[in-house]
Amino acid sequence: MSKDWEKVKLDEICVLNQSNTGNKFSFDEIEYIDISSVGEGVLLDTQKMFFKDAPSRAKRLVRNGSTILSTVRPNRRSFLYVKNPKPNVIVSTGFAVLDPLLSKVSSRFLYYVVTNQSFTDYLTANAKGAAYPAVDTEIIKRADIIVPPLATQRRIAAILSAYDELIENNSRRIKILEEMARMIYQEWFVKFRFPGHEQAKFVESPLGMIPVGWEVVCLEDICTKITDGSHWSPISVDKGYPMASVKDMHNWGFWVNECRKISFEDYGKLIKSNCKPLRNDILIAKDGSYLKHVFVVRESIEIVILSSIAILRTNERVNPDFLAMTLKSSNTIARLKGFVSGVAIPRIVLKDFRKFQVICPPISLQEKWFNATEPIFKICCDLVKKNEILKQTRDMLLPKLISGEIDVSNLDIPIEER
Image (cartoon, rainbow, N blue to C red; front, side, top):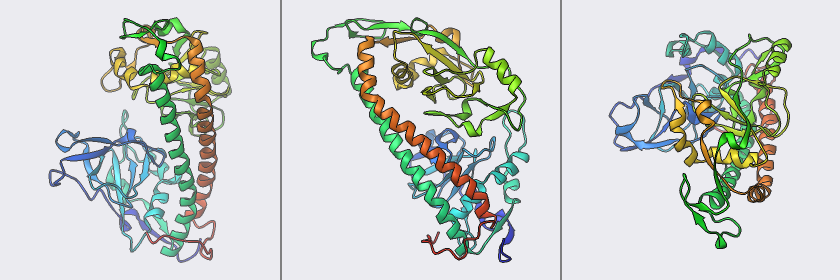
């Protein structure tokens, strides 16, 4: 590290939570970001609502160049660099909002400093509370940060941003492809405009009118197994086998590298208890934001799961991808409310879930749909794998760059002013 790098307190280079909305804004509608809206540097969605109907947690306005990071259960997934937001974007008080003092720090460099693993470890070590461990603003303000001259900050940010831009581009492609697959499903199985629908006749069913030859079935009729993962949580170890919970899921699989590890002995016990998913199993987020993630296991992986995740193993009457898409549909999520218990942490009750009804077309039509959409699923999986490699490379470089271990002061690379 060069001698012109300087140690400062975080609040010397940025302002925390400077915009508490109160009732002072003129706009009537807002776009609200809560913890579930953000995933590892990516904005998944916003909730559009009237300001008067917004939850009490909606109190912080974001600006271009703001960094937001979760203060509840600090982790390296719930953070975001804000780019060109609409003027009415407000985030939950579950986030800290950091606005850089641009004369002292590059906004992008600040983002990378506070999303580095060592900073997350600092927050985690200072979190308070059992059920919902959180850090307060003073802890964040007092954090020691080492900053180089602005030109060096911008070079570092440019290198790391190149990786993030590739990840964002891939993520946008995945989102578009997911929407394409969803639209084909909607067209065939919700609007009933499937191949040959012109000759179809319809009959009444418990879920409305359906084509002749289609059925309404309970999940237990089309699954050989409906269960969940382990209700016992083994102790974590430094080196071992991954054990996943809902927080480790994404739309296409697990963040395996971020799962906690358990011993070989405990892993073996959980395999014997059928807590290891198999190829073509459907895994669903059962607890918390239920059905937030639903995916088919594409290939066998060495992992076991906790009880917050349910396993559905289908029989010959249903294609796993078709059932997974059915479970992800908005109609299913709306109907599933009657099969959920709990207020603070809603969860699917499996004994009731087994009786949950879905529409089941002939397997031949399901397979025809799968043949049309499988290339889309394959591209999505390939892009997810590419993003994993990009993230691993970026995360390997990040601590070395922001600590000065890798010297970039003489690199001739394009840099942004912010």
